Structure formats: structure tokens, C-alpha cells
Image 1 (cartoon, rainbow, N blue to C red):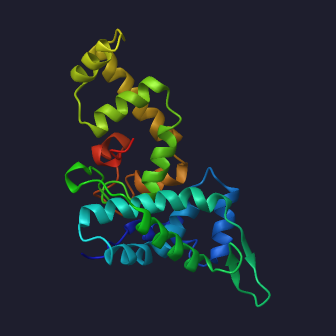
Image 2 (cartoon, rainbow, N blue to C red; image 1 turned 90 degrees about the vertical axis):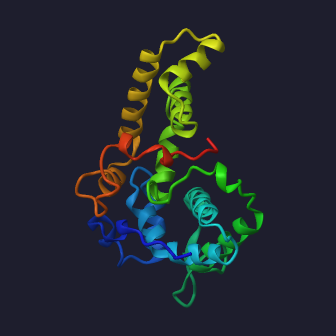
Length: 231
């Protein structure tokens, strides 16, 4: 099982942040929640360490990728309120006396020990299609959708249901909706999801000048594997 590489590390928006310290990156991430490049830079800095730790605990590459994304989703939220200070010796510390690197290692170990991974055959997440920064911001945008749009997106992306099957299910639940209306709701949802993403995340992962030609394009082209089965 090889440690994956992430081409977003070569994107100009991310490369320009490499000279920042951990404390500076974290402070910028906390102060600018509408920008995704700071979290992406933190991810690029520590992704190899996190994945290497997972390698020693999980044998299945599919489960390893899913756990990797899940851990970064956890870090995505925890980093929002993490306190980073400059110690007496000029060292940057978090949560009292740890460096950010050590804190991430400890959090990764905790998540690994507490992980209850689904069977391989039920995991639909694809690391290549939706690396953790994109995945985290997609899920954040998904939470902003109206209930009906969120439901049809989950059915289409997670369960691979057609518009006809989604309409039949909703009709059985008492909602008068046609397959054409389901398609319309899906199109509206995808448009809203993309517009809700931070502009720099769209630039890094979705625009045509992305560093990975296999990954760029509109949100609807990211693919069903962008959405986790846990939604």
C-alpha cells in the first residue's frame, strides 16, 4: 500500500503558503472560514504522516482511504477551535505543550483506535475523485441544501438511484414528484453545491487549470464517489 501523492500541493494557491509556519496557517484557517486554501495547505503538509500511520493499522487500501478521509474530516472541525501559541522558547504549541505535528499524530492515533470501519464492499468513497479538503467542503456545502435537494443528491450519489427510482420512493412516502422534477432538483442541488464551495477550493480542484487533469471540471463531473455512504 503506497502513500498517495496529492497534486493540489503544486497548485499556485497552495504553494504560495508553504513558507508560513503551522501557527500562521492555523490562524489564517480559523480567521478565514470562507477560504479553503489554508486547510488544504495544512493537509498537504501532514497528509503523508497521517496516511503512514494508517498504513500500519489497516490492511485494506479501500478502508485505509476511507479512514484517511474520515480523520481529515475530524481534523477539519477540530482545527477550527484549536489554540496555538508561541512558547517561551519560540516553539509553536497547541493544546498546552504539543506542536501541531504531534497533535495531529495524537489525534490520528486516537481516531484509528476508535475507528469502526464499514466493510470494504460497502465503501463508495474514492480518494482520487474527492481528496479530503474537497470532501470536507463538499459535505459542508451539502449541509446547506434544502432537505429535498439534499435527499435526492444522497440517493443519486450514494445509492446510485435513477431519477425514476428516486421519484417512486418519494411518491411512496407521500411526495408528488415526477422523474423530471427529480432531475431538476438534482441540477439545482449540484449548482448550489458548487456555488457554495469556497472560490479557492473550486480553483484548486474543479477548474480546468487544475494540476490534475483527471480531477478538474464541474462539480457534477466529480462523480458519485465524492459523496460518502455515511450521509
